[in-house]
Every structure is written in C-alpha cells, then in structure tokens.
Amino acid sequence: MKRLLFVLLALGSAVSAGTPPAESTNAQQTHILAGLKAEDRSRREQAEAAARRLARSQPAAVDALWEHLDVRGRGALVRALAGSGAREAATLAMARVSDPEPEIFTALLTGLVEGGDSALFTPLPEDVPARRRAHVEALRLRWNVEKELARLKSPSGPTGHYVGQFDRVKQLGVGAHPILLHILTNHNLPFPGEAGAGFYEPVYPGMIRFERDELRLIAANSFGQVAGADDVDTITKLREIWSRYYALDKDEHPVERESLAPALAYGLHDLGVEEPVREWIEDLEVRKRSGGPFRRRTALWDLGYALIRIGEHEEGERCYEDLLDEKNRHWSFNRHVAAYNLACNFSLRSMQEPHRRDEHRALALNFLDRAIELNFVDWPWMEQDRDLDAIRDSGVYKRVLARLKRDYPERRRTKVAKGRDALRAVPKASD
Image 1 (spheres, rainbow, N blue to C red):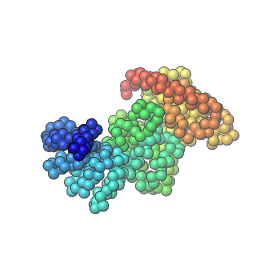
Image 2 (tube, rainbow, N blue to C red; image 1 turned 60 degrees about the horizontal axis):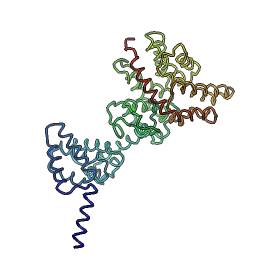
Image 3 (cartoon, rainbow, N blue to C red; image 1 turned 180 degrees about the vertical axis):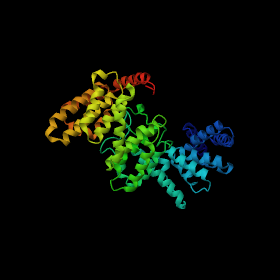
Image 4 (cartoon, rainbow, N blue to C red; image 1 turned 30 degrees about the vertical axis):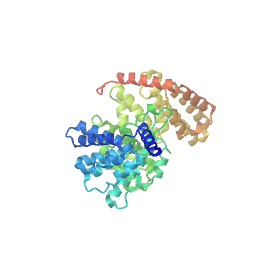
C-alpha cells in the first residue's frame, strides 16, 4: 500500500510540475516528425519550434527522432536541440558535429548561436575532425568579439569613437582581427543573442535596439584601438576595404560609403595612414559649400567630427558651433550630440593644454549643460566616457548627471517623439 501510494504521489508531483506523461510525449513526437517531413515551409517551421520547446524538458525524446528523418529534417532537429538553450539538449546536438553532411553541420552552427553561451560553449567530443573543431572555435571567438562590441552600444546611437573604448576587445588579442574584418565586410551575419538586441545593459534595456549595421560600424571603429602601427597585414586589408567602400555610390550604398568608409579612415589615421581621412575631409568641404540645406548640415556635422577626430580642434569646433547657432535651431539633426561632442572635446583639451585648463574645463561644462538642454539622454554612456574624465570631479558635472538620471524617463519619451517628428520633416534625397 505504501509503495502504491508513493508511486501515485510521485506521478501526481510530476504532472503538477509540468512534466508531460508518456502519451503526451509520444503525441508531440508524432506531431514534430510529421511537420519536419512536410513540404510546406510553415509546417516545418512550426514543427521546429515545437521540437525546440520539447528539447528544453525532454531532449532525448527529440533526439530519438533522428533515425526517422532525411538530411533536411535532421538539420532542423539538430538546430532545434542546439537552439533550445538547454545544456543537455546542446550536448546531444554537439554529438552530431562530425556528421558528414555539410547541411547538418551548418544547421548545428546556427543552432549553437541561437542557443547562446550555454549551447555554444558545450564541450566538443574528443574525436571531432580538426577542421570542424576549428570552425566551432572560430565561431566561439567571433561570439566573444561581438559580445564585447555589443557591450559598447549606446542608447542614443552607434558608439565607438572614443580613445580607450575597446580595451576588452583589445584583450582578445590579434586572433580577433580576422573576426573583426569578417564582421565588417558581411552585412547579413546573425546577431550574438536575440535578433535586434545587444548586450549593452543600461537602466532601461528594453529601449535599446542594436541594429545590424551598427555592429559593422563599431567593428570598423575598433581597428584604430585594437591594431598596431606595425600590423602591416591588417592595415593593408583595411586600406583595401576602405578603397572598395569609398568608390561606391553614396546613394546606392549609404552604409558602406558614408559610415563604414569614414570609420575605417579614422582607424587608419590612428595607425599612421593619413590619405583616406584627408580625402574624406576634402569631400565634406565640397558638400558643405553645395547642395541643399539637409546635405549641407549633414556635411557640417561630419566635418566637425572629422576635424576634431584628427586633432584639428578649432576648425572642428567652428563646424559644431555653426550647428548650435540659434539661427540654425530648426536644424534638429544631432544638435544635442554636437553639444556633447564639444563637451568631450574641451574636456580632452583641458588635459592636453595645461596652460588653458580652467578655460577648457568651463567650456566643457557649459557644452555638457547645453547638450542636456537639447535633450541628450545617454547618461549610462556619459558615466563611462573617458573623454569626460577631466571634469568628473566638478560639482557642476555631478549636478548635471544627477538631474539627467532623475529626468531620464520623461526626457527619453520627449526624445523619441521629437525624433519621429524630425524623421517626418527630413527632405527627400533630392534636397
């Protein structure tokens, strides 16, 4: 009687805990098997999602379907196991790493990325062929590189322009350089983690979107920090990529021509190669003098950044100050970031020019306050931006930061609303 009671209690506990009885598991297996064999794509996708759910609680039940599937179905199965995020399921998936079918190996790699750290860093079997092992190790390295890049994400837009920002990436060593180049030159790579979400964790992470091309931009910006002037191979490859991107039509390939090429030019400048950034500055000077208002103010913004970036501070400051002039207040385009960048610029100059330290500190604090007035909201980045180190001990800085933290939610809502209005008001490309 005690034995029977114990069994009944155990069964009841299992059901109440959500563990499906054997009949339910069999029904799920039948449903998944039929779906993975179906010709209809939507049915296959539904079956793969069901397999992933089942793999979290009963990975062996999913793995048992292997013998009943063709190559396509096995690929979907191994992806579901790896992508479930459950370590036991990932171990079963990793056991298939030596399968001779390339399609299955590709599906495994995709699933490992989808499953995150717990899947991707599941131990490999000892007898894995060397080439397959190298593939997995390369994917793991790229994952780590992408995570470090993504941690640098800022709520107010792409980052990657400041000295010292890439310390963690630099620690990954020269082996990270080919991975950075791969990220830079491929626009359709899967994300590290959930699609569209970065690893940056500010106070309000739900407000952060990590766009695909931003990962490429941050990779491009990183080279001046993580490479060295004696790294001839990397510099040669960067120059080749820059030449290819800079030769593209800016209207047909705006990301490569207008974002990635300049970022590479700045990185090459940091590595001692001057020609690309000089050519970019000449291009911007021409744009500033011609074209419609939208094109001119965009050129003014880019030119201000470029000149300050290469150390020509006073010329760059004049560009930013033009953007901030009251006569141009209808130019909503990045005015808050122009003020913030001027604050960073004068903070840095206060350290570089000791004889004008007090003057530059005062200007830095004034422009930081102006940036907040113009609805700069990114206090998590502001706290870690080393460009502002020279003014952190100031009472003004501390009051500005406290006010920004206090008002952040309302400022963020205002910023989003203004951004939508600004997008509606942006002239067409013909302007």
